[in-house]
Image 1 (cartoon, rainbow, N blue to C red):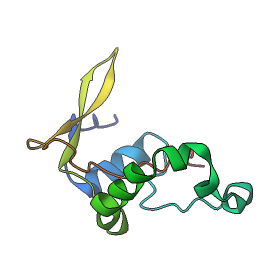
Image 2 (cartoon, one colour):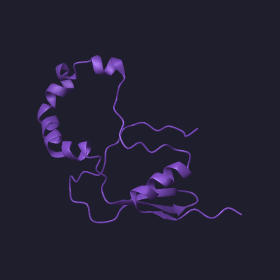
Image 3 (cartoon, rainbow, N blue to C red):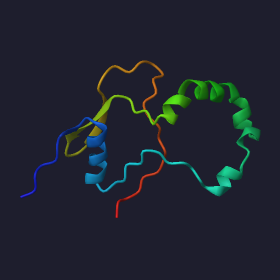
Length: 110
């Protein structure tokens, strides 16, 4: 008989195991290396020019967290059979707090 999986995953190691147990690869860091994107000079786009101050402030505020692969104090907990799992804060998060870097890549483990 297979043991029931835990209801709560609290540590980084447990969260990584949660991904693995569900057939997903947890990526600590992933650099976007899509050549067409890297070839673009996004600073010349209207969207960037219109929002340049916001981008610069965001960089000043969060770059060190991204560089250090920071993850806010969170845990994953099973909610129920219909919803599955959810992500929750272990402690109060301040307004504009950095939670984590989303890389936008999910790969199914083979």
